[in-house]
Image (cartoon, rainbow, N blue to C red; front, side, top):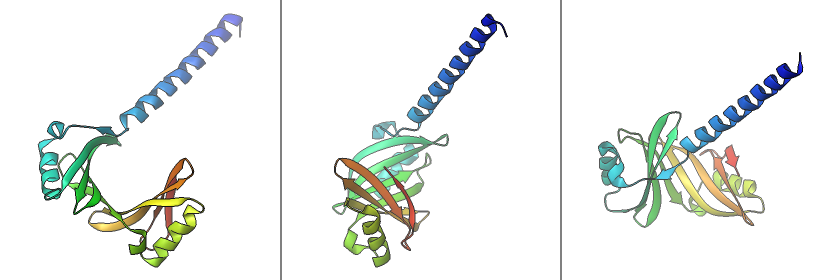
Length: 163
């Protein structure tokens, strides 16, 4: 291969790397959660938030795209307790996250969360309900300035963790 061909091949390789990097950035930005006004929500979602949040306070509403689908999250205060309810574009409830106390958890779940937290402090625990059934418990852990999340099944098995 002559020198001009080598330069052309390197240029194409660099262009390909830049294109892949740009697609990755755009994809992650597109899936990022962002705040929205309630008035900008689809009407079925507005109605669902009014129904699910009856008697409570809506603290914030956000939108997020996952796998090409837009989902909406309403951060509510119901009965003095924080609840996050996720809706699809038709207003159907997809997931409910309700803050719970560590002491209210089944022993297997509570002990697993404490063990997984290690030296970290459990600062918040939520129950996660999907399709009308308890799916998991999620704990937010703080170790110094670092934050992490741990998910445990209702049976006390580790489902995952994220820094």
